[in-house]
Amino acid sequence: MFVQNFMKPKIVILSGAGISAESGLKTFRDSGGLWEEHSIMEVATPEAWKSNPELVLKFYNERRKQMLKAEPNAAHTALVELENHFSATIITQNVDDLHERAGFKNVLHLHGELLKVRSERYPSLVYDIQKEEIFLGDTCEKGFQLRPHIVWFGEEVPMIVPAMELVAQADILIVVGTSLNVYPAAGLLYHAPYECRKFLVDPADNLTGKVYNLEQLKMPATEGIPLLVSRLIAEYPADENN
Ligand code: APR
Image 1: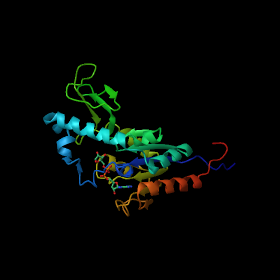
Image 2: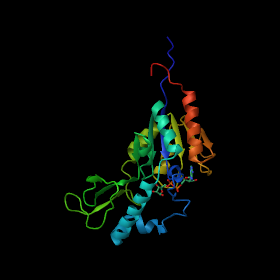
Image 3: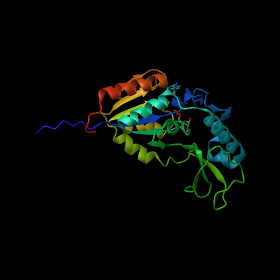
Image 4: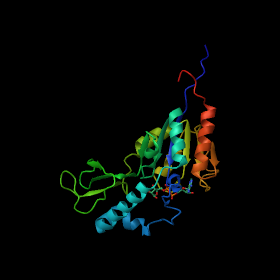
């Protein structure tokens, strides 16, 4: 007997700073590679932490405050709708919590999270912080300095292997709001199966012609993501037994 496979597709979303741009959080590239007038070398590397930890802590305290003032936008909300219809996972390079605050459950942060800090000496000692700021002298339970739970440039990306495995099993890959400039995150795209349907939502032209089976919605995330989500839901209507 021929049984058609109506299994719903597995969807993976790879998001970057562009999806948070319309929530008022500046992207790295659009601000000319500066964050609040700081170069990454001054605030986002292990060397910066060694030479000027106060500046690094102040920088991330500022970004945390800015993030808590921002709200999820229509793109974040539309992705929650997608998760209600499909098995979907977000792999994000963003350190903000806008995907979670919009209600998305399966989020994998490649580059860490602003709402977490960790022991400088025991990286497995990770602590949730909400509104608080952290300062020199704030220590973990073993008495060592707390640092932002952020992957700085030049540091390992511990979550890259689970991320690669997720992309390797995707039936649909949606890339939104990332210039794909920063590796290893940028390399994830090439771990998608050849036949995987790929979509890029970004007003800029980062990938056309470079990737097989990719369709670009050349528009901002708050237009492109809701459009794509309603298209995919219409294409795979929910049937009664799943
Ligand atoms: N909607 C969709 N895409 C947008 C929008 C928008 N409204 N505005 C900007 N973009 C796109 C830009 O065209 C660009 O391709 O978002 C992308 C932003 O690129 P980057 O600023 O380089 O951000 P990202 O790719 O996430 O950076 C990767 O580098 O900044 C460091 O570690 C940090 O995780 C970050 C990594």
